[in-house]
Image (cartoon, rainbow, N blue to C red; front, side, top):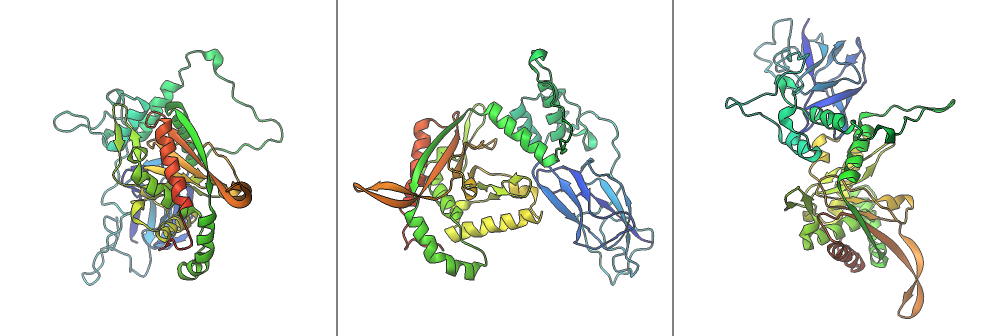
Length: 423
């Protein structure tokens, strides 16, 4: 019998651990290579993890709800009896002789050459030969945001490394020390008939990020009304051909994204991050776009959005939304955003005061397009109107800068005609 020990994959460049939310198979079930085996939540995304080999699942080593480091063994799979998989998994632990030389080894990222070390107790933080502590950039950035002294922490990661969870736990402990215990509200107790829904890891992290945003970022808000007549006409002219060529509908969102990109190019100070002693002006425009799922909302990032046409932006959003709904997004797909566009207007909202994603200077929300009577050259006319709502970090932007950015977005949209190219 040949076996392979499956390990927790690294689901993103800056993601070093994950929480097993659900096993999709149980011991004794047959698993098929590349088909989903389990669901994993990280601090950025929830994703399905495929089986690295085909065979029979013999043992589950990491239970649901358990958080494990990338590279840690999580399951044991007995390879298929036909011998095709035997010896082909790099770092697997076959109990039988490896395959012949006519069957070259095929590496798989979810296999490990050695059992992962079982660190059961916290160890001192890993250090370089010089004695300097070794922290990942993600840990350093999070520690700076939460004002945590890394030198005072004891790492629980592999080799005593300090993880993001160590930093978050330390910040939570400090926050849990009330200055005035009498002001701490008592937990709400459910009444008879109430349903108690446990927080998922993703929902808990969203709550933490939004709380951190509101407690650390001084939010300010502006709105402008936009005449969408040109955009509506352009879409009406192009939507049939677009649907035939692309296979999905042309919506108003990519037009607003294109207007945002143009305004961010013109006003670089909006595409920025407040960094305690400095403001970082980003070169690339990496546009986050809110995508609503059944029970949550995520923000995949369209990288270098300023290099895409309206059609290219539409393709990028459709691809991200499709992969999000099938749990095929990776953590890196949600990282690195420099500005966010929200489309709550698709549900009929007229005004939104959106919460800024930490690390960004603002979020622009497009509202519902509604036909309203407006004054046109001294007469009353009916036009498709839309409000653009802009939440911005008042540490980075003043009201004048925010108004100029919002005006640029409005002018771009109002300049669209039936002749404006989509491709």
